[in-house]
Amino acid sequence: MRMKRLRNGEALTTLITRWKNGLKVAIDCSLQEHMSDKEITMTAHQTLYSFAANLRSQNPLFLHLTGLHSDTRLHRALNATWQGFSNPALRASELLPYDIHPPQDVVYLSPDSENVLDSLDDRKVYVIGGLVDLCVMKSLTQFKATQLGLHTACLPVKEYMRVSSSSVHHINLPINLVVNMLISVTQ
Image 1 (cartoon, helix red, strand yellow):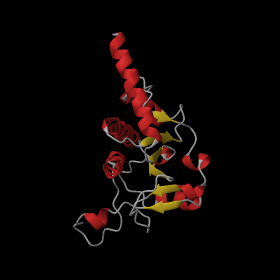
Image 2 (tube, one colour):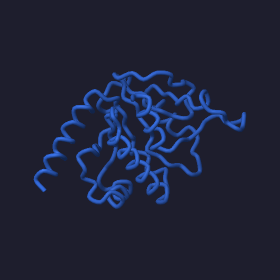
Image 3 (spheres, rainbow, N blue to C red):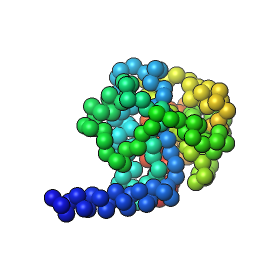
């Protein structure tokens, strides 16, 4: 048992060292009022899949949940999904990235942005809207970022994938897929 704890402690130390050099990515959990209970549960699952993928990564992202208050539906759903929700690899804060970092260092990823993300900058914090919107609330993250004076960008999905309809203007992606894409780019 002592050996297992030591290995886990060593693994956590190694992970923390790798995080210091990792791309900074935040999942904005402040969008809960726009989701149903079903969407909240889906958001919790996608968020935890994101953290699991990040833990398995050779070069993990510095992945952080932001705007997460302990008395919210999402916090309860995360607790129910990942019992205890106390893993040190799961970092969460009530603060939002733009409360901590200067606005020019924050890039809010939004499918509605006109700016296509063509490169990643280690000095920036990339924000993913912690939102599963089954009814597609167009421009929600774009509007929020614009109101806060933040830069926005969309992932270059249309540039690398064939979309069956020419009328598709934006593509909503699950949280864990966006995280996986960012992980794969940093490997």
